[in-house]
Image (cartoon, rainbow, N blue to C red; front, top):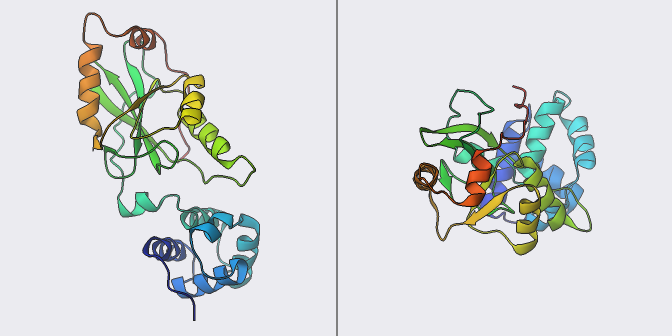
Length: 235
């Protein structure tokens, strides 16, 4: 009998099984045990690699396509779970690449339309365009699972900074020194908040600063520069 699972591990497996035709949580768990051994926990799922899982799934669930596999693999690694259990807000239609006079903002988020995440492990970044006249949610970006390497933290921080490098301001609850340095090199201005807040509450404060006659110099520079272009993700 399989060892008892932690609640969030059971959730990952259950959600992953839902996207695999013909699978259920029980047989997916047995497959993971054959690949990783017991108990199935965070450390073992962190070591899970795509190739052996793809081979095992291909033998047992032949109808699984590449997109379904990628979605299931991401869920097993913990990516996208919050999007399923606590869906993000709806992106607002409008011009994606704004003219000068506005600033693009990334908010580390884990639930709803809130700034409640840490830079290194938040499941998504809410991307806003903020001007004195409006606040517009223009994108929701979800970091890819971290790849195994000898310098995994640095790689993850670099990947996350690159994901939001077209933004100027980053709101987060926490960001370490090395990660902050990578964010700054990517052109971001990190702002650490003392507690979780609704994103629009904090953005209203930023909007008020934008409307001042003498905003901070770094913000004046940001307002006078066009955002670096970033293509929209394909549907």
